[in-house]
Image 1: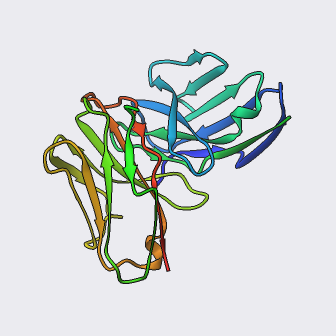
Image 2 (image 1 turned 135 degrees about the horizontal axis):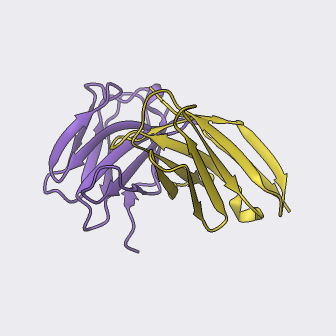
Length: 108
Length: 114
């Protein structure tokens, strides 16, 4: 069964705007990871946040984690057309458990 | 290119046929994973190897599925007597030895069962 659940399912924004997506999960975690998948391709790892961390940054990405609410958010700032993709959160330690993803479309 | 590679990229087969997919992980990675992804869903874990040992199998991996990693390098995933419900993208990933490490995914093999 899939533990993570992303929200919204789809997001359409203008280039230069920020995109925010959320992930909720069901059980305790050791870490949470975010991945990106371009259409029909494999997944690319974006960022990992550990259960004792609350916020993490990587370039234009900002991830927060609230273990009390069992939720995480991914913020992409100053979006570009190349950010058009599906974004997945994944939990578990070895065998990753993914949600259904948020599909982000960045309009030029 | 030193990333994870998968072969073939696409496979179309008729129901009842057997298919085999290959995954070549990043050379120094000891862990290798197989996932399955259907349209509009995230990947679902199937199985993983630590070197040549298959350490865990999902309940999704029915008796028709078998995975091997004979020398701890490349891996194969075989599906016997394919069914239309097996149509999906089969993704392979690898990671170093440490649990919780980033997993590096290959481009996937898209299987269509007619």
